[in-house]
Image (cartoon, rainbow, N blue to C red; front, side, top):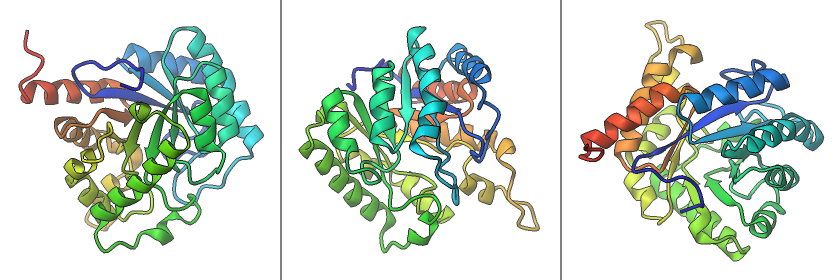
Length: 279
C-alpha cells in the first residue's frame, strides 16, 4: 500500500526539520550539509522514510514564504532521493509538494489535509504520489483557538472522513492515502490522550494511520514538575518511546519521530508482544 516499504511492523518516519524555529530542533539542521548529515543518520538508525519539512507547525509559528520553504526543502530532497533514500515532504503548499515530488519525494505529508491550499489535492492526484491527510482546523498561529469538541474522537474521525472524500473526489487513489489524527493540532493535552485512546476508531476509516507524538507539548504537560513547569522537549524521549510502542501495538501503520533508533526498538517490541516477528 502507498507504494512504500511495508514490513510486518509499523514504519518509522524520521523527522528532518529544515527550519529555524521548530519547537524541538529548530535551527539545528537549517544548513544544507547538517541537514544531509542528520538525514543519513536517521536512515542509519533504521528510518524507512525521511520527512523533510521547511515550515514549523508549532503553536504560534509564523509561516515562511513559499519561496523560503522551497529553498529550504528542495535541495535536501533532491540529494537524498538521489541517494536512494525514501523521502516524504512535509508541506501544506501545492507548489512545494509538486516541486518536491519532481525532485524525488515519494509521499506528501500535508498537515492540513488539503485544507490550507485549494490546489493541493489536484496536484497530488496529478503526481500520483502517496498522501497523508492530517486532521486540521487552522494554521499554527491560531489553531489552539479551535480546540472545542463535544466528542473529540468522533469529530476527528468525521472531519477526516470529509477530508478523505475530498481527496478521492480530486482523483487521489484511495490506496495511496494514509490518515493522521493530528496530535497537538487544535487539541488540548487531554484531547490528545483521548484521540490516542481511540486509535481503533480511526482505523475504521479504512486507511493506514500515521501517529506523530514525538516530543510534543502534551507529553511535557504529563511530565510537568511539582510547580507545573513543562518537561522540556529534549527530555520527553522516554515518553515518546512509550507512546510509539503503544501506537504500534494499537495498529499504527507509521510512527513519525525525531529519534528513530528508540522508536524502532519500541516498534519491534510491540510487534513481538503482539505475537509477530518470531524466528
